[in-house]
Image (cartoon, rainbow, N blue to C red; front, top):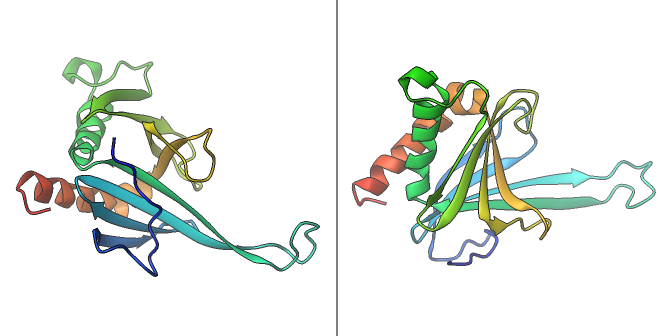
Amino acid sequence: MKQFTLYNPRQPLARQQLLKKFDKPQSEYDAYFIREDNHLLVYEEKFHTYPLTSSRRPGETKLIADQFEMPLSGVRWFIDVIEQRFFKSPEEGGLPADKISYEDIVDGEELHVMRVVYAGCDHPGYDITNGSRYSYISSRSLQTLALSDPWLFRDGLMGFLKEIASQYEAGRL
């Protein structure tokens, strides 16, 4: 399995193609969508300033960054899971009423989508986890990306993901 380095928006590597930068809704994070080889990388960062009353680092500003990685074919898989599993009734081929998650192996990587009440902000949405890759923040946690409903459906993320999937399938990405 290909390993990646943490994206640096101030000094990207030549092999990394920035597809789009989003300001995550209701979040202090910026999200960068990058293509590297046959993978989509989603790098998120924010600057955190410790309160002056903090006993650890009063007034210090620190960059907090993490990255989610999955095969580009996983973008279409994610879209299909949302539209065919979560949006349809069990009679139409969707998930059973008592299931809130779906997982599969996509190009050798274990991807998992779960419906969540809190998708990184004050809105419900979906978490996508790559069970084959560990977080850059904690080597004990898996890479997970929180996608709120407003970000996906109101602010254009789902349309952008559909563009990526179509371009990849047409050989243009």
